[in-house]
Image (cartoon, rainbow, N blue to C red):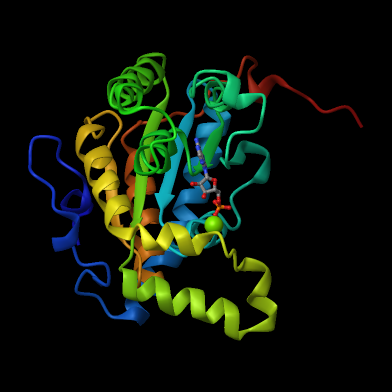
Amino acid sequence: MKTDDYRVKPDLPLDLSKIPSEDNGGLEREEGEKHFRRLRKRLRELQELHYAERTRGMLIVLQGMDTSGKDSTIRTVFSGVGPAGVKVVNFKKPNSREIEHDYLWRVHPHAPRNGRTVLFNRSHYEDVLVVRVNNLVPKERWEKRYDHINDFERMLTEEGATIVKFFLHISKRYQKQRLQRRLDRPEKHWKFDPGDLPVREKWDEYQQAYQVALQRCSPGHAPWYIIPAERRWFRNLLVARVLVETFERLNMQFPKPTFDPRSVVIPD
Ligand code: AMP
Ligand code: MG
């Protein structure tokens, strides 16, 4: 399995409807899960090194339709990663204050400081997804946002951040199963949001909006990966693998101590 096969290449055409959402990378579940546990351990080590090095931030963006598993990916892939170095930011409908500002105003303060890993559960991409599908601002405004987003992300990376983005890809049929499950199990009722149904009705428009955003905003320094998300073990494996590779490419080093450890004597 090569992670690069799942990266969105900005110069190639993209047709989301042709990308399988139940792919397993040619692996069996059992070996996939074993592999995942090793990667997760490695991810913990790398995140600690990144935290210790404290010279740059890591921004991870998660997007996907309702029930695509954004929360569960965060919970599973990051279980055991030191909570001090990691923050999850959930982007909901803008509140009355946020809506009075430009759409990046509420986003920028959450960009990671050096050494920190920040996970965006939804993100500034909603401003070219839900906003585009429902024309929450006129087309003349949202259509300029792809360029702003590219500029914003380029600025963050030129200032030292690393950015990696995941689209959790599911089918409409799979979403139906997952929504039904939330209705059938009393302990899942809290997850059911009747507001998800009108969104589901516009499935094709959302897929189209995702396709444009993924295609237009996937430069090499801030790539999108399309994660087939219906086999959850494979989703976790692929996300973890991309993250491990992304951290490894940074060639991180533990900072040199400012003292000579051999010369220090701890008093009794
Ligand atoms: P959830 O993540 O399912 O709890 O829901 C969050 C909701 O907030 C989703 O329906 C998003 O589409 C919506 N949302 C997030 N960002 C924006 C935005 N910038 N404008 C409008 N709606 C948004
Ligand atoms: Mg929802």
